Amino acid sequence: MESHNQLPVLFHKAFVEKKALIVGVANERSLAWAIAQQLHQGGAELAFTYLGDALERRVRPLAESTGAPIIEPCNVADDLQIKGLFSKIREKWNTLDILIHSVAFANREDLEGRFINTSREGFRVALDISAYSLIALAREAEPLMTQREGQEGAIVTLSYYGGEKVVPNYNVMGVAKAALESSVRYLAYDLGQKKIRVNAISAGPVKTLAAAGIRNFREMLAKAEEKTPLRENISAEDVGALGAFLCSSAARHMTGTTLYLDSGAHIMGF
Image (cartoon, rainbow, N blue to C red):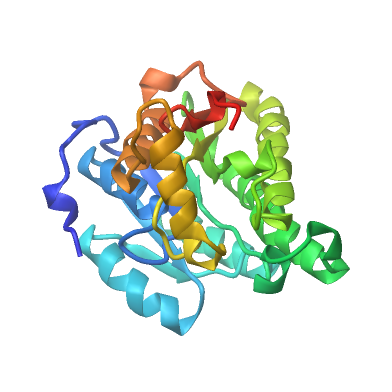
């Protein structure tokens, strides 16, 4: 496991006194963890969630390595658990500056074969967990992000190009990512007057636990490296740096945007 102390400090003291909630860390290779490391090195105090005992065993040591005072279970498909999480944040901090949303799920059978065979329940689950969860979390975060006078908030979520173009075997997750990116725009409009910014990162393929559920993912990685303009794949650290930038004051006028971080893959007509 790579220690957060080994990463270059890109945002020195940029997040001092900032409070950040990180939702979606699965292990040390998670994109959410890469962002969390940059925020922590910049001085932010972090809170983490996990889903179930198995993930707690992976997430808790990572969270504790940052000194996180809040490490709570949260099933984003359960409104009561979401409210319970934010109740703990309100009790401990009474404020929140940053929300990192890196949550996506679809049934394995809905990521194989033909998209037309997606079940009604599979569609509902994918859209609920992968897209609606951002709305549910943002709704609870809003009052905490406006708690202090002059406070500004930043919300960042993780997307993928399969929400814009067809990627074989991405199927219903592509539809969910399209809904997620549209939600970013509508949330940015709703929350803009409160000085809360909402953005998405459309990251190229990275070896993560979530990616393991996509058939032929290794082939996807190889093709990306071969065909992108920069002839290389991105890393989790690249995502961490961009995520932290979007949470910083340097991005204070950026909202409602999906930024591509894919070595230029999105400009190519494969």
